[in-house]
Length: 390
Ligand code: ATP
Ligand code: MG
Picture 1 (cartoon, rainbow, N blue to C red):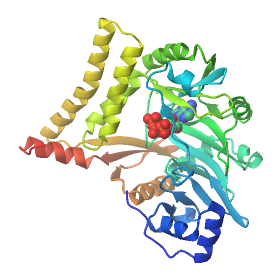
Picture 2 (cartoon, rainbow, N blue to C red; picture 1 turned 180 degrees about the horizontal axis):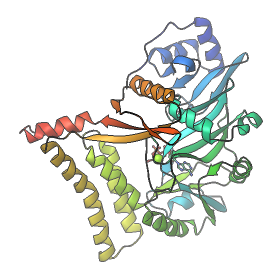
Picture 3 (cartoon, rainbow, N blue to C red; picture 1 turned 120 degrees about the vertical axis):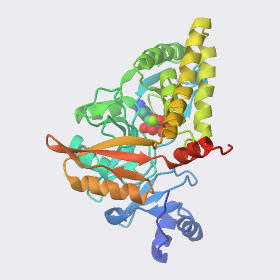
Picture 4 (cartoon, rainbow, N blue to C red; picture 1 turned 90 degrees about the horizontal axis):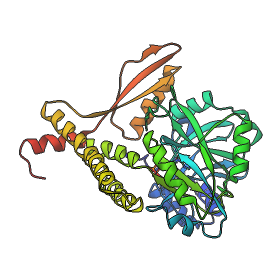
């Protein structure tokens, strides 16, 4: 990913920032030099982003000057994964009577907040995505931000017109925001689940599906039932939460979702990290043991896992052999072509190799297909087919 170049940093600004963060000036200077702390660009230049986790500050945290001080929008913390449900749930949430189970929806993580009177959709890494920001303005009840300027919506952008993670499984026509957390600015402290639900309902936001609260003792077996059903619909999985949101959550996913990740991973096998592939295969091992599967069920799992690895590999290799280039297709829908142009510029800035096709007018909007070229898998496959060794 291309980084913005170093600029001259005003020493007085560094001093104020250092005192706000509780770091010494040299450390802040160093963070800027390393680009661990960097500015967004263009009209969002006033927003600093942490490109790396520093002390207690999440990666993707954004901060900006406000009044005589600063204001922070904390990054979304990584959720730990349960590899087996029992005893992990009991152990992780030990001391609680009940845990809440929500659907883990599969889209794109985004924070929506107001800063300097401007609505922003912030990506996991702390960039301001112009496309997502425009969608947020169109889709969300912005009165919420007038009433609660100090709160941040944490949600998932879902649906087919999503340039990042496009899924057809949710019966969403274009894109929608499904909110899963509301957190305070600065502290990053999440609201308890019932309070969150109350507010989301009041403002008419979509929220992630809430299954129920379950006693700690029986939560694992309940989650297994939920996961089986979600899996049948190709849905991703669940996030298990402390109803008061004091203890950190846990996540767990369906086999179908692991396999779907693997299909994508092996289609572009030379782009995908090996940890990403390996972890999804290992999850299948723990799930078959925890679910105590018989030979028939196990056989089915083996077939599904094997197919999600080999089918995309076969297709990719055959395509290259037939002289085709491998690419990933995404799409966006915009009311104003300016949004598409801004988004194109944004992807270029991030160093993404993407080709935007001619806009197709559809009703009041334009549909634009985006092709992302997967150069590394293309080149590798071609080289191997020409006799190169691995
Ligand atoms: P993955 O989505 O594959 O788990 P990740 O690296 O984004 O990858 P985490 O860092 O653990 O995983 O974050 C959990 C992800 O789950 C976030 O991207 C978040 O947007 C998403 N998510 C979906 N539904 C929920 C929910 N109900 N509660 C919390 N997070 C959720
Ligand atoms: Mg996800």
